[in-house]
Image 1: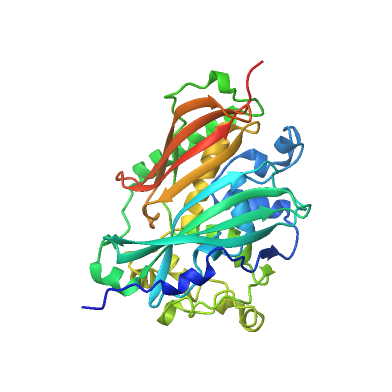
Image 2: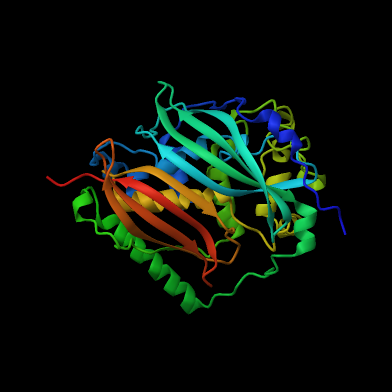
Length: 389
């Protein structure tokens, strides 16, 4: 039996102190925005169809709210995974977002100021003593306008204890018949039709009723291919795509053995970029290789926590329409999307109000489950909608 302690004493010296910022090398392009919408399974024409976007209130393509996280170099986890925890690994625990108004568009050069916030240690069935660490990200465009604030939560744990406790045992992908796959595609199409039906019209706050349900969103089955497509839509996964941190050392964070690779190393990237881009070597490869997923306590290849947060934001923004704005969203991740699973998203309007800034707000309760009803994520969000005249 291994010693079950989790030493988080090094984390205190980082709290409240700004880190190196995340900076893109080049401005965002329409291709980046299109690739993002496609990778995240988000068929909102505002983000990829020039003709449709030209007729919108923006007059051109705009990025989804969720695209802010694509401009960071670590899904927003930089300030929530800082400080040494020996023999540790990390998965995503959740994201809280505040949106401040500006939308990201082609030509924007986005940067992210990062500050570690806090942490606490809890006992979990997954890995025994587990550290829940939070850090703040402040996204700005080149004009200095604040786009969004993200408070990211990382779950840091002992991978050896997670393997020993064996809490995740479903190592085989579920099998789907042709009839079941056809039904899944039909359910996807139902959501797409509901998404497109609003068009450029306004969804008025006055017309929304407490207790009203949002259209059900279904996508999957997930696969190593779909997870890889998501990974490559994050700009930092591209070779020399962003200014790399010089203060990042995976081994110094406490990652061990084959998971302590040189991911994002700015020197090695120029010599052999395949060793640094996260898909093949280092801590991120557990997502795409079942062998390494099992090494860190997962039963099979699994999706990115940051992508689950994106799915939630896109789902809510798609319902709100181009005249609505997500003001705030707080989501917690309960378990990842595994290969072979599908994701089913539902949400309900639970409140309506006029806030202190005279904004007409609806509060929405959102849930994400897989095909057997296991909760993957849950969120509450406030969305601003226009008022009728």
